[in-house]
Length: 473
Image (cartoon, rainbow, N blue to C red; front, side, top):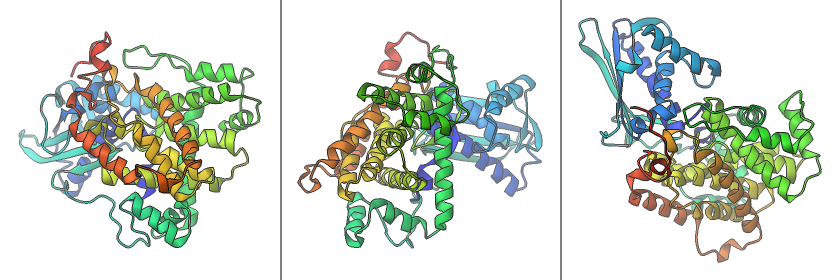
């Protein structure tokens, strides 16, 4: 799998419940266009099932569906439209299907939340139905949002995503990756680079990864400079703003780059570094919770971990780092994420939060370890340590919102990633009792054993012990 499969630009608050349904809606519209059904469509219904329905209101699934059906792209759409366009559709009871064809559409009537019904393949299922003027169904499709913004259509369930047999280094496990590094005497990032260069030139790889980093940095910066209350009804106050204000009291910056430079060269101790790590992570996920533009890394709910650890690296470890250091960090992170995607899951609806924060922490740990000068096996050991201490972590968002405990949890994942990298750097991987492949296998087995209440349904854990009503579905 490509690192660009694992690191995708999108809009919050959830990769599986927002970005996935958005992409599925786009696909359905494209099917209507390809089969000449768009102009014949006068009515459209969407049925959401399982976890996708149970926490769909809190995760903005209905908003994502309307955006996708309206022909908006999550990578380029102005984030203000994510809030204004659905309100216009709701008020007018009309939609421009595909951005060009007007149809009647009332989200309260035409989007159905079937929370206690499940489609067979995955907890995040959805069915789209287009009708003509005589109310006959002229086209229907079922899609599954399988985590990290990935979408599969019914009938594609057994298709192996991302298989690229013509790459120079075929990687199906961490053992494969380790062996390639030993055989070629290269770093992990070198091996991943060579695979990516099968499909893109080096300049384009660098440009795309630096664009991904730019979106990450902008999310950190916006989150650290935006105050207020997050939407959704929990009345969660943003905290990154106040932490940033306390740590940099003088406050006014022309750009994110200038702000980063100020942090880099400020005199701070361990206490301040820890606060910054938490601040960076929470800033991203406060933006995510506010339907901001972030990078799915590997999911939206865990989008703050990798930017936080990379900011730690750039500000406090290697303040004179170059663009190449950022590119290599993201190459390693993306490859480790692909190992989890191929060998287990990155969907909280399938595996709980170990599949989100745990995976992002492992990705960041390996990337940081290489940046610190660790060997490839030490970097893989760092990923193993980070995930090992997230095994069994449940997903129980209060009110179906990606806020409590999700925002703070990103800061915890970032700290664990840094500690895992530091431990691995001082360790001998040949003497390790646990391998990354063993942890990936264990994570999948744990996912299968975990009660469905703790898989992004808001039916268990904190979600039922905090006094707030779940949004009506």
